[in-house]
Image (tube, rainbow, N blue to C red; front, side, top):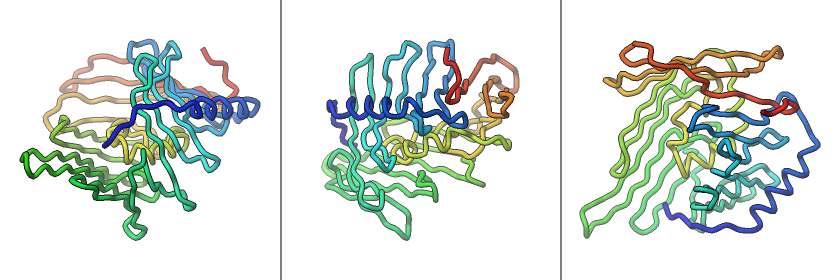
Length: 276
């Protein structure tokens, strides 16, 4: 997909104003921040506004990795990625009165109501993304046909769900390594599902590999494995606050069923919590 590298002053203004307007509101049932792999070189901090919506991803030094801007209907209207503090990708999303995407960076998207699917054919590119009832991808394909060069490019992802939990995702393409991830779940509700739902709807179209951790599921994963023959598996344990909200998700790593290591997968902070 075409990527436009640009940063509008409006983005920072909207983000700042939104933060200031929401700063006085606090709901202890909503997320304030989630730290992934804290204390490691891979640490990421997901930051949420007073409405509990994901607004930015930063590293441990509070350096921006990604920024999300919303409109008054809580649709994501801008998604900006950063590298070393500088913007590298900027997606501007437009919607119609039904909150359906009509364009991204000027590229027009069609929507089929009966199929619950976005699609287009523009020149030598054909795109399709089928959605579930939450507006999250169940099948994604992007195909570039180069008849004169004989080097077509295909990217395809499939996602299977049961009881609103993603059981598996698989993907392949000319310009990517084949991926397959499988999940098992318990009964603990995943607070990230609602908090990131608007972002997940955008990522369904722009970045389907964003789903490779099972984030789009109603419940929190307890086990993760990969393609047949891959020896790596992960088991997850949970710690809870006295309020019964999840506090920590721990991860144990195995190879051929032999324990290798353990660490904190994610630490959940809710509005009103004191952040480290």
